[in-house]
Amino acid sequence: MIPELNERSREIFRFIVDSYLATGSPVGSRTISQRSGITLSPASIRNTMADLEDAGLLFSPHTSAGRLPTEMGLRLYIDGLMQVGGLSPQERRQIEGMYEGLDPSVNVLMEQTSSLLAGLSSCASLVIAPKSKKAVESIQFVQLQPRKIMIVLLLKNGLVENRVLDTDEDYSASSLQAAANYLNARLNNKTIEEAVQRIHEDIAQNKTQLDALTQDLVLRGLAVQPKDKSGGHIIIRGQSRLLEDVKALEDLERARALMNYLEEQQNMLNLLGAIDAAESVQIFIGAENQIFDQSGWSMIVSPYKNSEQEIVGAIGVIGPTRLNYDRIIPMVDYTSKVIQKIIEKAGG
Image 1 (cartoon, rainbow, N blue to C red):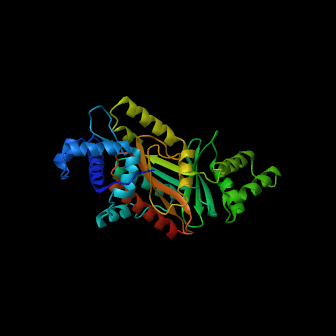
Image 2 (tube, rainbow, N blue to C red):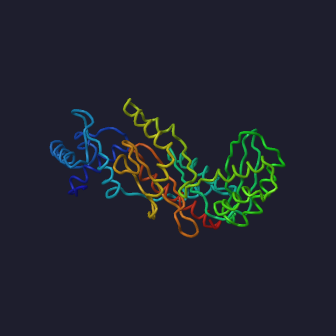
Image 3 (cartoon, rainbow, N blue to C red):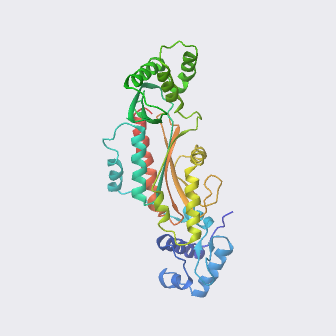
């Protein structure tokens, strides 16, 4: 349980956290007495810092060093002491402008978002976009290169989803067209999941005139869709930025552990489940919870909804606990609102 602070403790604690977020360095009593404007002696400040340490809000990384906030201390600061400002009109226009004239593709939208967040935050970015439940209007198979085919799904809401399929052999243009014609005739404004059973039965009972190679392509095209309802696209960009502040071997090991964690897509899908009822930005700090339990790192995540007001995905930023929270929180929040407007406008 996070303790309540009196006015003196609150001022000293806020100064320590503000300094830590700005510099990453421990803060000592002499620095506080000289720069904070708090009219207390260094001895009184040290006593208050000791009380804050006993309460679990501060810790000393080295003997005789200053203090740093603990993860519980950061949580207290973010939830009760930090003043989060909004974005300026110029910053809002900058974010909105990044989406103007984009191709109406879920893939393009998500890629643009991941690049935008990584660039603006100078941290790693996270984008979670679950598979669409919308009916498919048409499907195409496009040869990208030998043994690599792109499946293009035009959804009823006007958005486009792309899947890349690696194959064991090459397919002719006629096989690609035949597979697309076959599927388009049977999808009939259904989702692929709704049509799968009928198509499998049709092929198994030899009711189709497709040759063996084209049948194989049809089945592979169906299989590329995630079977699990929680399945979706996950894009993470800027992982190399997680290593920029690494100063010790312990920090490097933590960075490697985080990157391994991020590579497990189920971890990120669990995160989406954890914010299913969230209405705004969620902040995960270090190892304080079971969903994101990476000591030394923080994640700022905001969900976005479809036109039916269902949460369908999330975007966020991942970085060291010394994040610029008051800048990144409104940035993530506003970007998620822009994405939601685009999806709602498309009827997604």
